[in-house]
Image (cartoon, rainbow, N blue to C red; front, side, top):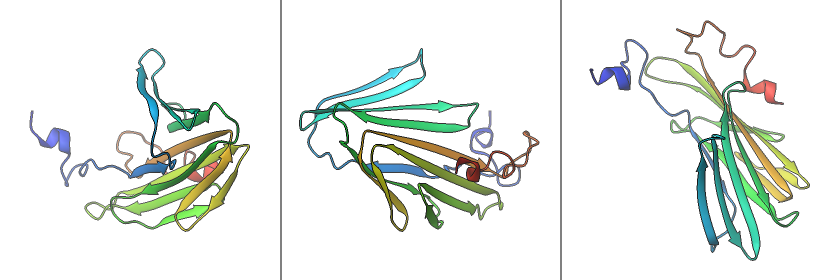
Length: 171
């Protein structure tokens, strides 16, 4: 099997590249009882730890029907979830925030394929502050992050990638 089968070739598909990175900070420097779990029966990834006598849990899964990555942050004490969240694009594409969403749109210089990645942040019992390219959630009971990505590659799908599934539908 040739290496191009796994890496792609510029004249056929282009190279497989990440659409970007979802990053967030909680500000928790010193934690105890740290635990990571992967529940294959539920396709669920879980991280939990204790910080200042509060138990924090982060759960993540990918929904194929919704074409989304879902991350939920909870804690044992109400109004104790605060994060700063952003999307980072490896190609230095402009990142825009609007309301409770972050959007990155660009195209690959190698073959012109367009891509878009969007994050919607939902905070129960807290407030969301918008900065230049980040969102900050303060004093929430629960935080939900919904990440979607689309490309203009439609060789096999037959659908318009910026049609019915685009990131604007998250609003």
